[in-house]
Image 1 (cartoon, rainbow, N blue to C red):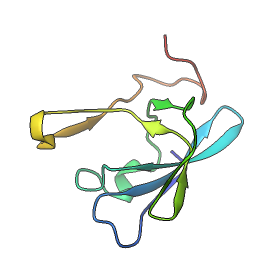
Image 2 (image 1 turned 120 degrees about the horizontal axis):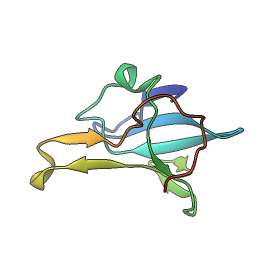
Image 3 (image 1 turned 180 degrees about the horizontal axis):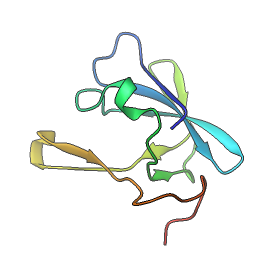
Image 4 (image 1 turned 60 degrees about the vertical axis):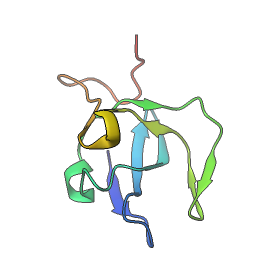
Length: 92
């Protein structure tokens, strides 16, 4: 993850700039109650990129960051990569 910031007027949306191969995508995710923008920068996360862009709170989201959560979202954990792998690598 290259950069991350909170979306204004939202307590849970984070706006992230994610490197996907040679492309940078902006992805909005509702994880702001579990992660700070500072914690996100530098993470290698698993993303879904074959979605139509969506507009949330006036911002465009070009994908989805995958995470697992307990019932009721009391706990949320990002799906991350174990070890070093090239940006844009496929999920199998």
